[in-house]
Length: 329
Image: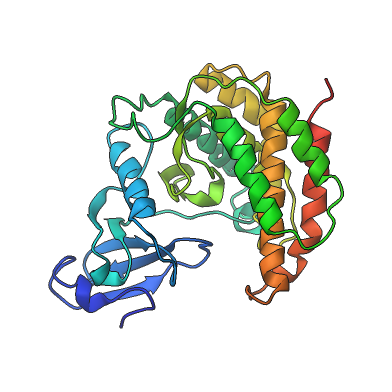
């Protein structure tokens, strides 16, 4: 049986010759992910959302390229099988990767049964894996042209400012002040690394209390590594109700505090994290924009599902956290 966006008949022969079955992986907010099996082997197919017309195969090529490049590094990623840029097959470019075992922990209730010690170990594995990613020599793995590191922070702030303008439907206390304060004190970036762009626990698969695979590379590029660290910390600092669409795993008993997370990254990476407040504050701005975008789509009736009705109440507290984090000069 085929699913929307996935024609199994057209995949037959590319993924074995027998009958194929598939299921959609729930929880994705952008690109679509399916698990496909012939009864013996399993694969993962990833493609753009339905109705999303790409002028090029840029997104899929980008994800496929970075995952393939990281195969022989310390960063755990699925093995890639093939990339298909022929839109006649599934209606959009797509790629296939190996199925990886593991759990994408998203809520505190999911990890509560593990106990504080195991929860702490998983969090530290998340930090260590990020340090491993930032240690990869992107030129050696063939990604020298994967991004434009110069001006990365300026472009990021500009991009998310435009995203905010596209989602404005109400007054949000403090958000313009936060944007202006960030713009006035953009730090000098460290040496560029591969940046994941959305690094958080539920974008990984955990197996035996370790990160077994890092997923969702659609926002990856070359840029300032502290942007990943700031976002990881912001995700770990933001709280949300258990029935919200917002992840809240970091509030589980045993999850290490912000200072411990930062110290662990600094130790593992050897990087200067003295300016990290700006990156954390920027990440709160980014999360506020994302949250407001979800609220905007929900208010227009374009998003349905459990938990979305309370998203609108989460934006201003995140903005307040950003302003509180950004120290006065």
